[in-house]
Length: 339
Image (cartoon, rainbow, N blue to C red; front, side, top):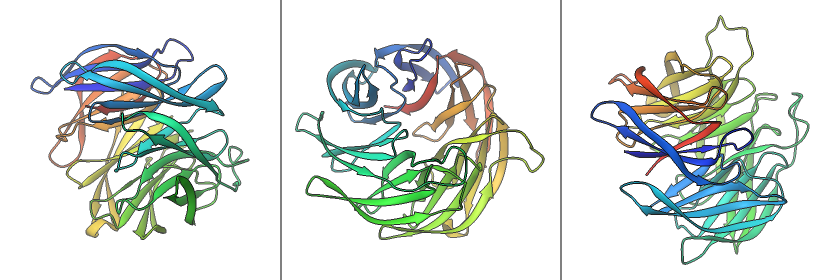
């Protein structure tokens, strides 16, 4: 199985790496540079296209690559779409594959790009500015961190850490129009979210409070109902929530804690409206950022920004994870994804 890691390029990272996972042996077997691309910290992979956030010398935006060989994962750079502004930290391709939306942490902007008939991000169309702040020292202004299409495929949900908000947007006439917004607990700093398989519940992971917020979802609106800690009750150190992922079978979600350097596993119960924490497991590295589950759900792979290692876990039948032997070195890893 071929996977990719998106990285910072502040120290030794080159941007995009590819790795091999031997699913029969349960081993990470090889890693190599796939493409140099400045601060390609988040990727979106669809068919034979790979889209990466990119920071140029004075401009920022989206880089489009072709996966020229699906067997080996070789990448061929096609084109940049860069304009004035800060680099995005997350992006998503809409299900109709006509648009890409990215989130800008520095400014709290959500930006809309056209995807042309070649499958290339070719033009920035619009910018939506999130408004608001919060009580934490890192919430002096909006900090948009994540964007995803809602399960009904009607809206874009944008998560803003600085404003403690999830803003729902609709794409109309090549513009981003606000539909609604949901405010979560002040100072919690929402970062990423996933939906359950029914599309009626969302699980919002917070960076500042290291919690998972369960929210009901209906027609563009979010309604928070319960909160679960991703840290041990005895932990008193500093930790920041990073990523949240759902198992392909729809029964479990996982979150990564930077500082505590762990992954917490939760079972989705009561039809999606509640969670049961199953495990908090060390990631065997420093500052775990993104991680991902293989499409078959058998393995979880975690990237560490500071210790520069890629760590493999086996997913047990009960949703818990167990670390496997052998690691790969990937500098400044932030994103993990698969063909």
